Image (tube, rainbow, N blue to C red):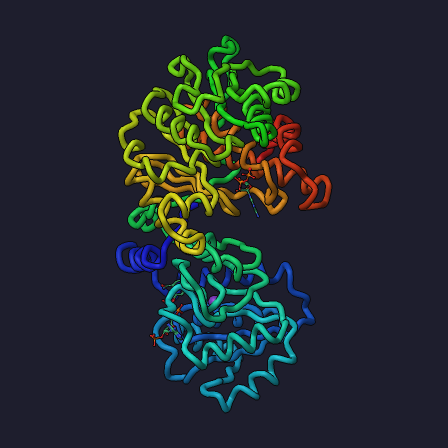
Length: 512
Ligand SMILES: NC(=O)C1=CN([C@@H]2O[C@H](COP(=O)(O)OP(=O)(O)OC[C@H]3O[C@@H](n4cnc5c(N)ncnc54)[C@H](OP(=O)(O)O)[C@@H]3O)[C@@H](O)[C@H]2O)[C@@H](O)CC1
Ligand SMILES: Nc1ncnc2c1ncn2[C@@H]1O[C@H](COP(=O)(O)OP(=O)(O)O)[C@@H](O)[C@H]1O
Ligand SMILES: [K+]
């Protein structure tokens, strides 16, 4: 499913109307009707519904919804925020259809009308927010802002059309009030704002409504951002040949752990083994080795002198591995920087950099472009901020743009973690993960992801599919555990490694 910017959505609509010849009022009919079909399955017949309509096309969708609600016997109260004369084009077409069907409209044009509007609002059980959609420019103007504030204050559940009003479709920083929706009905394509912060926090639940935009229009303005779904996992997950052997599924090395953080190495190791890696070695200081060995008996050990303060503090035979993951629990020391440089210069296979393995990377970014085999970085927003010299807020506001620029500049695969983890390939293609929940918001879950990433990168045909599947499975395990236990806390990283095979089985056998 394509994720779009404001400009792409407008260009897609324009293409459908001008090049394909679909009328704008037809798309509006599809939008309003589609949302109505969802609403009728959740609204009680005795509920009083307020429909709040702005002067653009988002408001036009509101007129269609109001017509269907009325026709199906729902008590419907329609308010236009603005003058009657401001409703033009396709929206005026549907306003006329609504009125000719017997519907009536109230108008709130200025502050003086606010009292009446608020009085009407007190009668409502539910409201439909068709005030502003993708067409918003800047912050809502003062009167619209007052309406938005009234809506939020009222505590009446809000169902937003396309976007929670006030939210800019491209996300970014949002310092004004926006409608806080209980649910948002996204029209055809999710917008970037649904996956950046703080804009995402206004959406509530999200349902996608197909409005019949032609594939040709979607393809003509493809921003190369997609949502990665179960179906994508099932299509791309590699099935094993009966003739395969341990050498067929990748030989990996995990450089992880320290005296203070042996657990990170355990988690990454167990995850890589459970995620099906053929052969796995671990490099860790002697002080951590026995703990790791105790918890992951299947792994081998590639020893080196961890007390060495130089790049010699790495196994000698790096080239014998198909892939190396570096970072979980290694801590910060001069030696770590030396190790990073050696890995960047000397590994021929896949290189995964995570956690403190990323700490010194901002000093050595030039080395990334010189690598000829895939480099995968797995930063959380704090680590990303350090890599690009920005604030965490900047990263959260502009995840898509920032990740794309970084991946293209340095030729790396980037997994920018957090809710809706974003995977970016060196050519700029992006995929948003659709699994995971706050059960993952605790220490060690990132180490598990690193293990799965390494294992999948060595088993999939395409690295991008491997990474999307790794984050999908990681989130899916957490979703399964949260569902089974009915909690989103108390699930710890090692639970994920135990639950991995069963979750994978469910994922592969589930029908979409
Ligand atoms: N045919 C199609 O394209 C289809 C579109 N569809 C629907 O249309 C939506 C996009 O419609 P849109 O482009 O008309 O923009 P919309 O979100 O209604 O807002 C624009 C209006 O708001 C105003 N306004 C702007 N900024 C403002 C501010 N800061 N504060 C206050 N007001 C502000 C602006 O006024 P102006 O600046 O022109 O004075 C203008 O009147 C889209 O989300 C989807 O729901 C579907 O029906 C499918 C077919
Ligand atoms: N609220 C959330 N919803 C979904 N996934 C989350 C959430 N919070 C954290 N995660 C996921 O949990 C993992 C945490 O990784 P990280 O921050 O590196 O933790 P650690 O370094 O302690 O292992 C990431 O995969 C991240 O995407
Ligand atoms: K809206």
